[in-house]
Image (cartoon, rainbow, N blue to C red; front, top):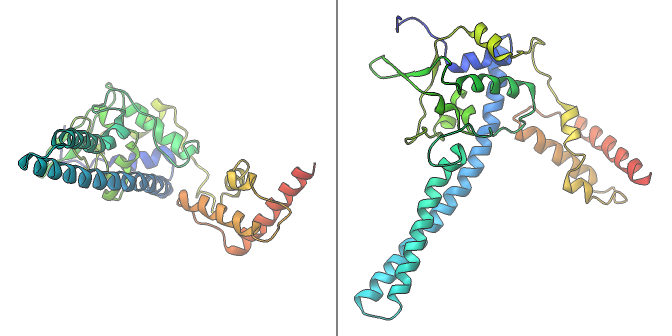
Length: 283
């Protein structure tokens, strides 16, 4: 095999699984991975706060127990135990990102993937690719070393719940990934395989309908059917209800990295939703 011949990035293979037009597939892939990135950032932000709090508490307890021990003051043993427990908690916080990805310290079985909308067709097709890559019998993805040689990765790299990061264009998303048994893994991956054959093997059905819909009104509105804020809404008080509905619709589009309609369009849909809610409750 000639390692120097052009080989497609795994990202381009994923785009073909999503749409027969690679350009449209890439746009869809960017939307999906951007939404995943926001989920990752929220989780890691909370983990960062937990880490700093436990680190500060551990240092304070360790310092206090050391000072009490030097001065032979009662209570040093209790503080030492507390500092050890706090240190254990700190280690647990450090390991939690790996547990979130692989369900444990080591990658053993594929995890449930994290997506903002796992039921959309583009995501399902992307998961068909990852299902293939999780098999030991499938072609191995690889990254390129500095000397230009290939380093193949095994199927466990696609077991993690954040596996969508492997096909992200922005390496800040890939920087959140861990290797199955090692530390961070942000390498861009390539796949030397017949893409059409892989699509047939996975029984994927890439979209051929052209560009994705500009606005996905149906899913946005359906998402409000059982929303807590909508259930708690006093339909007799019209003032402010429209603003609440518009805000919920905007949040739906933002969470999925989709372009949202203008204020006028959103207001029109909000009024229709409120009318439907009023009629349903009246009946």
